[in-house]
Image 1 (cartoon, rainbow, N blue to C red):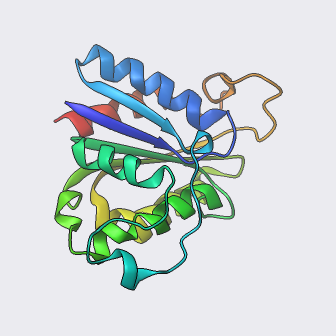
Image 2 (tube, rainbow, N blue to C red; image 1 turned 135 degrees about the vertical axis):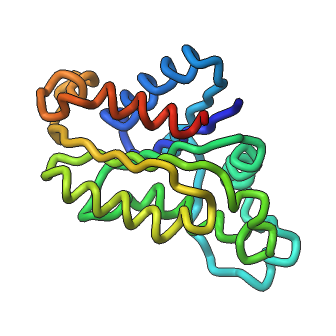
Length: 189
């Protein structure tokens, strides 16, 4: 089984650390897992040129979005992780989401429609705030992309000071390992 993990964080931190931990869990279960860090990709904003792109299902912009969408199509399941920015994903992830609309508007959405998807959000606010972000991602995007099988939200510190394991060590998420394990199980069953 192939799982594609997409990290919408504009910096290295908790989101990436969680995905690396999940990657270990996927490996233990015999699943392949590729992590895409959107911050390392060239992703332009959507120009709204629907009339040009939609018939072919390919965006006219030449950046890294189309290859990522191809990987999404080839995968058996998706993990989308995002920091919570005012109960929404950051612009980087939102730009990617906007750009991938070409798949849905061209009628090729059946290629992604039933992908099992896990959404994870992290934020310095109370978990309930990050849960709103996860619901927004699910409502804005995943209803077109896949079948959400789990959402998980975690609380963290916003200032990590180089401690990228803070999400696991800060004591704010005592069940984080069990939560990640259950998310992996939901994708693989």
